[in-house]
Length: 213
Length: 141
Ligand SMILES: Nc1nc2c(ncn2[C@@H]2O[C@H](COP(=O)(O)OP(=O)(O)OP(=O)(O)O)[C@@H](O)[C@H]2O)c(=O)[nH]1
Ligand SMILES: [Mg+2]
Image (cartoon, rainbow over all chains, first blue to last red; front, side, top):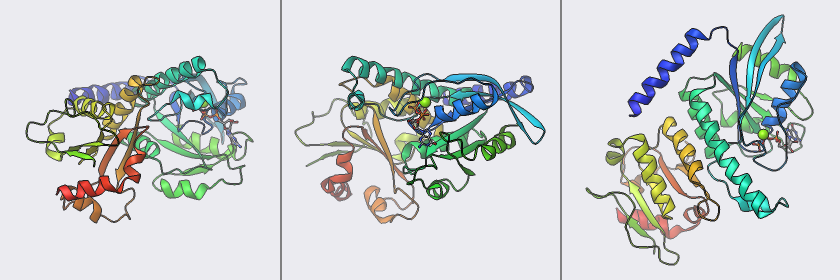
């Protein structure tokens, strides 16, 4: 069964590549909850299309459905790359609705939020196995990157041979450490940024063009 | 004392064993041989059955990235408020520089393979904290 699924996956990947050469690449924005994925997706979408992707919030699991922004044209050095951006729910191995109660939420709402969050994470994992052509992995550089979820996800991304850019977000905050992220994933390039303030977005766009163009 | 259950020749998963007694933690040790003969979904089922019985599941060989991805996905579909909050997963040693001897004693293993430890999200802390658990595992060898 594993063999069959693998075979099917690689066949569909190959045919995807053959027939979709003109199609924009689908770039998934992944990372743990609250890393700033939606803030980044919104900034990219606003910079190049004028509108946003979805709501941002300090409460984890704000994004509970993968959301796609199509045909985002990014211009760099006279070259244009067109990508579809997929903002995904923060990946985790556990969701406890009681955490949301701390954010002044009623139990009903907290339970609903956790249910939607779990569905969203399952969906995001599915997208990662089947439906993305590249990954922007966003980390909050004020937190410890050496988590099992980050290690597993980077491993999953690598095993699929997807191009991946690691973004060290929230560099505007004092406790930010880009080096810690570089040390955690030395095999990949780490780009510092503040998605909120818009710091270092030029380099982000340059690397997006280079990696996904 | 924690109860340690290995995987005997006809061990058929973590079900049907003695219920948890107060403070006791059951550990399901899944050896490399047994892992090698299981399909991805069988492994995931076995892990989640164990964890949902409040056991700690230790895999002698890790999961492949694809299996990890499916484990996250299936875990998410099984989370249910007030009943199951999901899993905590760790590999030991945590980094390359960690002392290997603990591992070797643990599984009586010469190799430097990593162990994967999976437990219920609300209980895995006990594994970090409870020295007795670790000594129970070691003394089993
Ligand atoms: N200081 C600072 N805060 C940021 C930055 N980027 C995002 N944030 C804040 O971090 C919080 C989470 O941002 P989101 O963009 O919603 O995070 P997310 O990764 O989409 O979170 P989920 O959808 O819940 O997984 C919000 O309060 C943002 O304002 C940044 O560069 N600097
Ligand atoms: Mg979001």
